[in-house]
Image 1 (cartoon, rainbow, N blue to C red):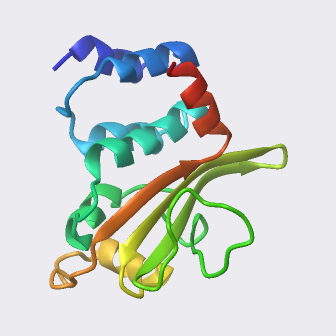
Image 2: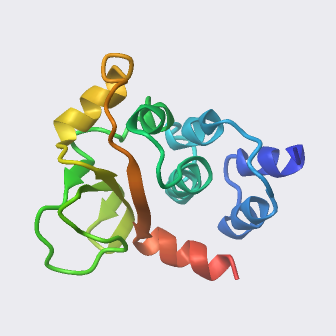
Image 3: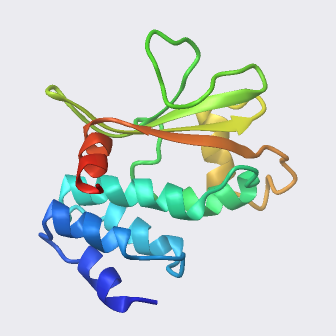
Length: 170
């Protein structure tokens, strides 16, 4: 494990360019999901650092076919993973980075949004017919729902933080 990259990522006030460079140099997944969750939940980090950490949490610790029980462990205890920041996509007026189909529920997790930007948005789909309330019940009490066969199908990212991440990652 390259500890210097992890230390750098957790630095308060790290530049956006240095943050992306450190993430790019991480290599294989060795850190626990809690590494990213600690940053996401800590308001002392910049909005960009918290948003990119949310994207990295999903990129590095979720995968298609992951059962809801495991997915719930990954997103559990994220402060903004709640009714205020989560919604189900039922109608589409624009374009999103994942597929909409009848065999799945598409969720939109809006990390941040301001009047002047698209913020940071994570879209994910789970198999079956779910609601935000039901998803949060699964996340809050995974053992009770351990027999649920819903699986993560797809994850996509959209917003200004993604555009900036992509431009700095070249």
